[in-house]
Length: 437
Ligand SMILES: *Cc1c(COP(=O)(O)O)cnc(C)c1O
Ligand code: SF4
Image (cartoon, rainbow, N blue to C red):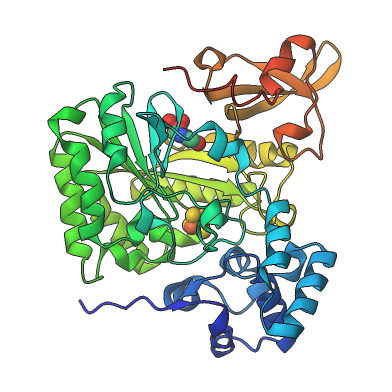
């Protein structure tokens, strides 16, 4: 089968959109301005097969990948526009100030999760929960298209100080080797599957060695199924990739492909269905996770359809996230109370097999916090919360409470209900909160 080849389009190619739809000059100009500070990339699959051009403003994938002037404060937008009149692109003093306000490392990833080996930091690794270690391969820090809300945006904008990535010197393997508590290694990015199979192999094979027998699970986080499903079918090294995944499974490890799926339509194209079948044929388990994003999937019916379709196609629903406190979050965020309604509305209408989805979940400094419900506690309307994953493992599955607030969008907007709830909502100092091995 002859394949489609990946064509990436950035800001300099915006005119390509006019092949699909008559887009006003003003909208393209706004995208160029916002693109000075936010990542922009689409590709021929997203444009040809995902976006429904009949009503782009209503389309989840248009909203997910395109830029809009309202993603920025109007003062920032104006400052960028003025700066661009001089040199064509905005200088770094202007863009850096906006980036700092975007909170590049939510959850204080740089200070709290950077592991050490022999007295120096191991770059490209995050070790927050004892049993799971995150690896950011250096050449897997881009994606086949970019989500405008993405909290990994410092990886894409080329600012070395803000980037996290392991070079291929493999110090991460040495780190994992001596940390026997690590059972799960998660390759993430960006998108590790943007790498050639031959490069990915250099990350995966060392993990299969006998000296890393404590690593029982390998997870790969990816959006390729949604943004470039041909990665698994007709790309020139698709067969090598599939063979590599089979090799991991044959080694006896559990291989989990963690699919970022925003909307059920991502699973419907012929290319995506074929890709799912090919991935399943390797023996990997496919699981799905995604944030609730305003204008993309903030509707219970979408999640109901997503979760039931996933089960039908052989994908296990895993996490529904709340958008993190970073980037152009004000444009995309959904209040916690609303996210809970969406989760309940979706989950109560699917079969038990699709109720493996947990949510809505905030991935915070201290762990993954689920909003479990709203209840009257001693006469006060309250959120019922619990950690599904925590730095302090004793916190897991202990219910705690915060005053109900229908506009709060993140944990830092919540007030503890009583003094015993305060600990779970506090922002501790990094030094106190280091991982206990
Ligand atoms: C979510 C996450 C993990 C994995 O958590 P699981 O609950 O095991 O899926 C590991 N590390 C970090 C930093 C995470 O955010
Ligand atoms: S696919 Fe993932 S890493 Fe890439 S832009 Fe989207 S959210 Fe970010």
